[in-house]
Amino acid sequence: MQKIAENKVTDQTKSDIWFEDLIATIHSHKLIYDTEGFGDKNFNKYYDTMIKGGGNDILILSQDTVKSVIIKKMIVEYIKELNDKQIKYKKLAIDYNNSGLLTWFVIEDNDSDTEAKIYLTSAKINTNFYELGFSISNSIMEESDNLRIPEHYQILK
Image 1: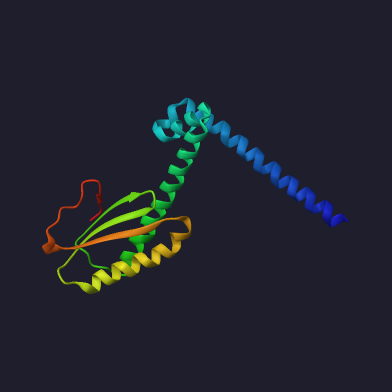
Image 2 (image 1 turned 180 degrees about the vertical axis):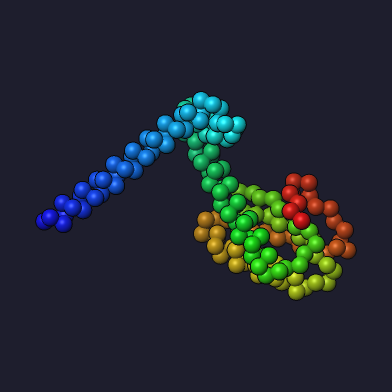
């Protein structure tokens, strides 16, 4: 009987601490909001959306935030894996859409080994993110194709 009471106290204490921390965080966010997010436009945009109370706007904002976090994590893991495998490409540019990361590689002509390594690396990263609804889609060009990287892509190398 005493163990049940101890568990309740522990659970109650945990929830008290969690709510106190949440309230403290909200108070600190109010201070940051009042100083216009210390220059972070997205910070105030988030709270402005919450204050206006538009349900759809809040969902869209939350979806955009989640997508941004996942895409950033995907990019970091992908670049790390490309570097760890020492994959030799001439150029790499990226973009993203609602379902994942878009890549544009330029490799040496007839370099099927590099092309295969890029696809295998993408497949490995895709296994980490497919349950979240995100994947990598590759466009691999050879130097002799002489194609310009689309303007909406950001060149990394």
